[in-house]
Image (cartoon, rainbow, N blue to C red):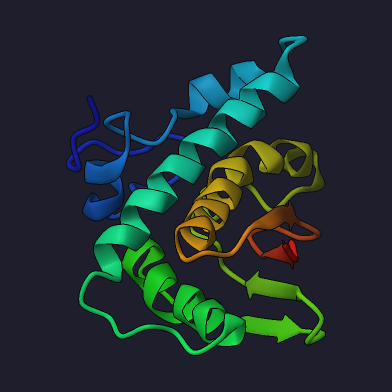
Length: 172
C-alpha cells in the first residue's frame, strides 16, 4: 500500500485523497505495472482496463463533488466545471486551456500534467505516456457520463509534461 511519506521513484505523484478513497484500488497503478504493460501482447487490453478503472472513479467523484451544486445550464457549463472544480480537486490545478468548436468537440490542455511531470522530457518516453493518460481519459469520460453526457475522450502528448485531452460529445 502507498504511504504518502514514501516517494514515487519514476512514477506519477500521489493522487488527491478523494480520488484514492473512491478508487477500487488503494492507489494509482504503480510505475512497474505500467512499464510491464508495454512488454505484453495484451497492451491494448491493459490500457482499456486502466481507462475503465478511471471511468468508475470519475463517476464516483462527480457524484460526490456535485451533490451540493446547482444544476448545470448546458454542455459548456459542465465542461467549465470539469476544467476548474473537478480538475482542481483531483490534480490541485486548473486546466490551462479549454477550447471548443461549439459542435461537440472540446480540447482541454494541461501544460504541466501532474502524472507526467516525473517523467523525463525526452522523446523516448512519449510512447509510454499513453499508459499514464488512459486512467485520466476514463476519469473525464466517467465524470461526464454521470452528468448525462456520453463522450469519447482521447489524449495526446506532443511534448512532456504537456498534454491535450480531446472530448467528443456523442449526440443521442
